[in-house]
Length: 191
Image 1 (cartoon, rainbow, N blue to C red):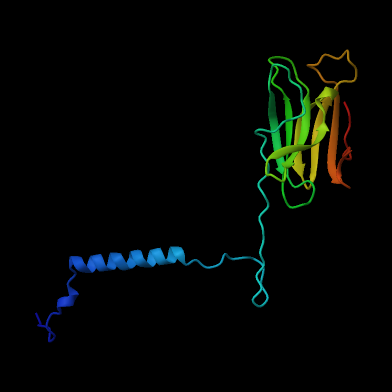
Image 2: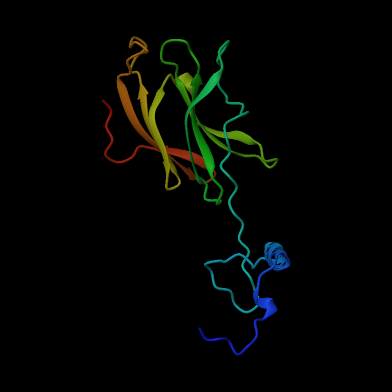
């Protein structure tokens, strides 16, 4: 075995003080990096020193605590289905809800409501697309491309039992000139 020409160096052996110093340095770097963060990345390029500030749309309003225009007597109103989307083009989503009375039996009629946020941030009903007094039920609906589409089941006469709707209607609502306008999508038929 050949002997080293250089005597052993004392600093090449690790001691507990080295580990303490290393741990302290790493903790300091981590603490400093959590305070000093870079600006968030954006997909848009900026010109010169100008930066583009974007605001995120507000979350879609919920249905809890909303006073729906439906009279249920001793039972409560329940939200059967809901969907969200930007219906008026303002960049903030609205919520569309199918609501009916929580009747112990039978098929209670549905109401179809549009909910938005009031200036105080609380959700409120801004439009009734289907009123419960029509006696109709909503079997399927969606919010897509700024429109509400629904399959509405109804009755041709008062003699038809409320369990068995005999009319199927396909409807579409879009926001136009400050109101929701109902149209019938192309290719729909009543049964």
